[in-house]
Image 1 (cartoon, rainbow, N blue to C red):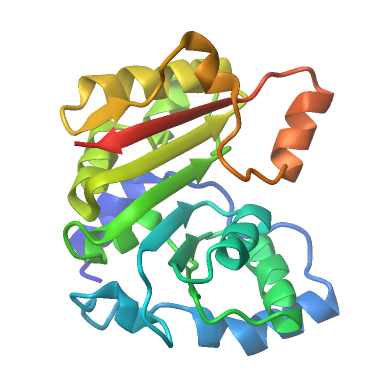
Image 2: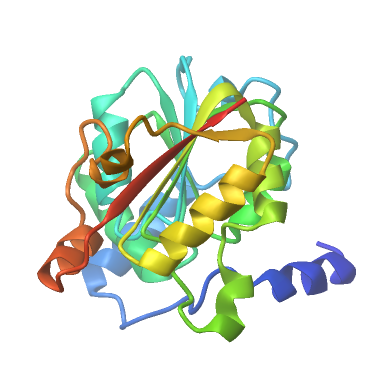
Length: 233
């Protein structure tokens, strides 16, 4: 990547640290063995039909940005085997947890990008995705850090480019200020329409939603999660 492009992306800085606690030996071994199999190579041009990324044809390709330990991503990839899934997670410990699960139960409809999500979004072809999930992202709660929130006009432009008409952007968070922030930004963007029928809709979990550890923590701490769905016009 050219130096100018690296500097530009460094200013975006939508994720924090890359490493947490030292990986357990089994996790480290699974990461070393499995990640090369699942990792996307962005140095190669993206195929016009993203089905080519998988070992068999996919009826749709879905993206999850910041999959954490991979609970939701794995659940969806197993629930919808006819679809292809791309997961993004720059945090090494999260990727290692997912690779350990994939070592136990390999999936042929899943690919991984373990770096900056904006690089992947810029690599993908126009109108190539059926959905984008951004679930419990880092809320960057301090006002001086709000510029690091992933939902912003530039990234919504990226979403609009890669989502096919009728595709969905789904957002979940237990942080009220980030929920309001996302609603305001998406409702201002001409490419997205909020899919709420009544006010209570945004407290109803997505279809076939598996509770994640982030949601469980929010509920323990008496924070009410919100689930927002926006349709690409």
